[in-house]
Image (cartoon, rainbow, N blue to C red; front, side):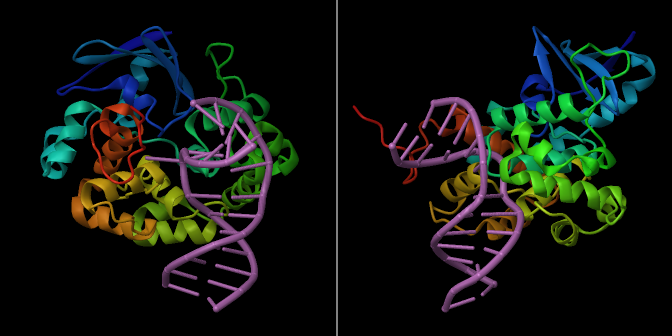
Length: 296
DNA sequence: TTCCAGGATTGAC
DNA sequence: GTCAATCATGGA
């Protein structure tokens, strides 16, 4: 077990980032966060101007962890690019240091198939059950930490055994998508070379259980498409309330609007809207027609 | 008990 | 092309 240190030239909100609904498999113990990057266990700790990495071969894997955490993203330029209005500037101020992650495409795909019409606590539990049932113990990792099962493994799992992990009706989607990926019917590398809208359409047509929103999550969180703009209920609400005068707009149109309006870093704008919208910080005192009525 | 969740699919129009 | 019903499940 070794250790390494990633030096930062800007703030990194480690806890907010690891629990921001992009990844679901990090576990916190005190001030440390343990998870799997590149198939191997790592433990992270914020160290004021740096992130400490520990675990097997940590010295040699620091670059890999850097890539995962995207610590080299040009945050000042990103904030300048997207923070052009008061609402976004406020969200940036409240969540400064929140980063996008660059995760492994298959785990991201499976995770967001599971996420459909669910919520973060339940997604977390379901993925945990999948890893407990089908994953392997991570080499030289803590006992409870398991790898995410590769496509070929989940392709062989029966939909019934997946449903037992809490997937509900999504079990057959995950089973089908696993087969598709395992058989090489889609290549994430090829998808990543397409422009964002074409890449999204390709994922949607190839993978069961992957619609526009899940596809944009895959593009944004694992394939380096920084202008992807996933629209879930929270983002839908936040965009309508803050930018469209409360007027509802179809999710596909909100996604196109977001990419157009915020430009090449639209995905970051989306993540700050999501984070701000789903927490009390951003919702409080905002007013608007969709705000819940409060008694007294 | 009802409503909601990082939605997708299917069928009707 | 858009729209509504339907799909499991647990938490608030």
